[in-house]
Each structure stands twice: as C-alpha cells, then as structure tokens.
Image 1 (cartoon, rainbow, N blue to C red):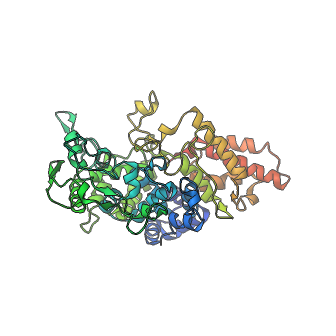
Image 2 (image 1 turned 90 degrees about the vertical axis):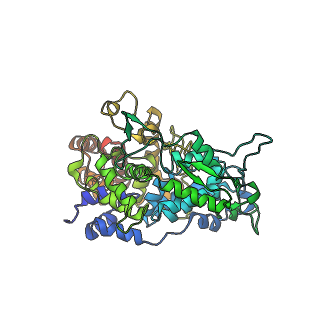
Image 3 (image 1 turned 120 degrees about the vertical axis):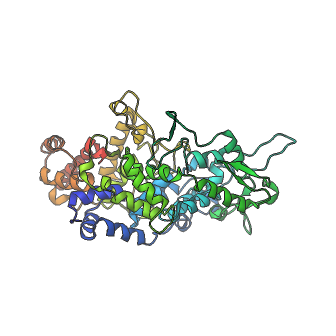
Length: 510
C-alpha cells in the first residue's frame, strides 16, 4: 500500500483516534495504517480514572454523595491519553453498553462508580466481546444503572417477580437487537416480514438468571468506594435455582448463580445476531452511519472468526473495520457516506490538535450536557440506556429520510444545540476553561496569511475536506481582520478555528 498522504492520514485518524495531530499524521505516514493500528493495540494502558480520583483526594468522605471529579477524569483521558485508539473504542463501547452517571443509584460514590465502568470498558476495548458481556453483567455500576443489583427470585406469596430491566437490555441493546439479522446486518424476512429476536417470555426467563447479585462488601463497607469496582457477589438464598428458558435454550435447574450466568451469556453469545449487530454499530461509531451490507458482512465475518477460530476478538474487529476498502478507499465516498461528528468528538479533536493541557491536572471542563450553552453531550451522561442517539435514527421530513438513510448523531441536533455548540467552542478556542488551555504555537507563524493558516487547520482538523467555496468565505472574513500585533494574530487564529469547526465539511466526517 502506498504511503498515505497527509490528508489521507488525517482522515484515518478522524476514524481511528480521538483526533489528529500534526505528529500523529506524520506517524501514520511513516508506519502505514496497519502498523499504526498494531502499535496502538500494543500500547500500554494510560492509567485509570479511578486512580486519578484517588490521587486527587476524591475518596475523602466529603465527596461521598457528589459527582465531583468524574467529568474531569473522563475528559482528561479523552484529551490527553496517548493510547488514542483505545480511548476511541472505549467511548464507542460506552455508547453501546450504556451506563449513565445520573442512574447510578442505591449507593454513594457516584463518581467512582462511573469511573469504574469506563475503566472496565477500557480494559476490554481490545479484548473479547463475550468477556466484556460477562464483565458488565456482574459490574456494580451496571447493577446500579439497570437495577438488578439486589434482584431477588420470585415470591409466590406476594407475587413479586425478578426485575427485568437488565434481561431486556442485554438482549435488545448489548448483543442481539430486536430483529433477526443476516450476517450483513439486513433483516431476515419470512414472507416479506422481519422476525423478532425475542419476546416477553424470553425476558422473563432470562431475568431469573440475574437474581441474587449484590455489592461485594467483603472486608469493607460503603464508607469507602472500593466495592464499586469489585464484581458483584452472589447471594445464594436470593438466586432463582429453577430452570430458566429463553432464546430457545435452557439454563438448567440447580446451578449456582455464577454458573447460571455463564450459561446464559453463552446462550446469548451464540446467537447469530451478535456479530452483525455489534459490528454495524462499531462501524457507525467510527466510520460511517450507513455502511453497505457487504462492509457489515466483512466485519461481522471477522467478529465470528478472527482467523484463528476466535469469536468476538475486538482488536481484530476494529482493525478490520478501519482497514476495510470502504473505510480507506476514497472512491467509496458518496452522498450516503460518512457521519455527523458527535459534539464530544469535535471538542476533543480540537483539543488534541492544539495540545490542550491542564497545568494543574484539574481538567475542569465540567458537564457539557446543556445543549443551549455547551455541547449537548458529555461523557457517560446519556439521558437514557438508549444512548444520546439511536443507531437507526432518521431525521424526520429530511432529504436523509427521502434517501432511505439513517443519521444517528442528528438526534442531538436542533436549533438550540447548533448555536450552543458554536458559542461554546468559540469560548473554548479563545479562552479555554480555567487552566484547560490550548497551545497555538504551531499556528502563529501562519496567522498573518489566511490561506496558509486555513490550509493547516483544514488538513489537521478536516482532513483537507473543506471545499473551495467554504475556504474562500472564511478567507474573506479573515482578510478583514488586522494582523499587526500578537493579539491580532491570536484573534485571526480564534476566528479561523471557530469558522472551520462550524463548517458543514468539518461537521460531517468523511
């Protein structure tokens, strides 16, 4: 494969990282795509959010009932961690297997619970998807969020039944979806009609498996947060020991809670939907909202068999989807290709490109969920288990709908969020937040020449995809601005970055 151009390397990094930098573009050009991915897969973990919270003193009892520290530890990793592919995949997994900090109920130390969940996803980002399903199914944060922590078996005397939340969502959202799929992600049809993957009886049957799980407080208490990163413990007397039938299979009677869970995960994982359902969403998160069925089938094939007979090898899946011809060959780009960049990814792309740092390691960006004044999105702050947006969302009464396409991230887009994003980024670009500040030293020598300044920003942030008309409009605006002082040059940089980040060719990642 020929050496990637700088624009092609930047485009690759828009899909494979938290954001391009001039240094990372050069690294991709030197190594090539596959070797860059291999280096990222082999890169060491960059510390944990949990340890950062402890180091910053957030395990002090005064923070027991607050969320303080979480936003900082989440943004810190997204912006500064060198294992950038791992961070991108972790973020994608957090929007498939959703937990939100607002729903971490029934225990104190919400910041630590949220940090533990992101750390768990990061641990499994390049691992095996079955192991990830097992890990989240016993994680304290998931037990809190989907309310099966403390779940007990049926009580015939009172008529009480096991909580069904997690049983429903592990099937609907984390593994197989609602409709039977072909390997290429298209619906299996019988007499022209799609077929459901499960029904109410399947939920009821599976819910019996998720009984008896609770926090592991062995040797500790809720006075310290440590219990939140331990797998939950089985309490035998609360667990349903009868047989549990779902998806056409049965978890035998008499098994321990842990063994019953293992069998249940195996049943779910054996379902043919898992590969296309998860593969398509990963493609959507990283590359394009509307992958062709052939693209999905190729990646799902790797999900089912990584070449060594292993199913669910996420490292192999991620590498396959990033190196696929439909990801790398620009000849595939057309009106249905690409994706709207999530607001979080826009912010982090700017931050990475211009070496944003926090001198005090405080990362006080905060909760950016307010659409009117901030981004309308913030790490692990989804409004529901259905994520910030649905993978099949179609903007109503739109040209996208008329073309039969989906545009998931557009579910975050409205008049308020468009204005809020631009205003927030304008402030971030020019002032930062607290000691979270950019370094524009690479742009200052170019700032007096609008064409050179825009060429650099266009390549790093937008992979050279801003068209001549857009560049001409921005250049015209910059040419009206003075360039006769340090402040004037800074203002030209601020204006250029704001206008590029508001441009349609930047907002749509292709």
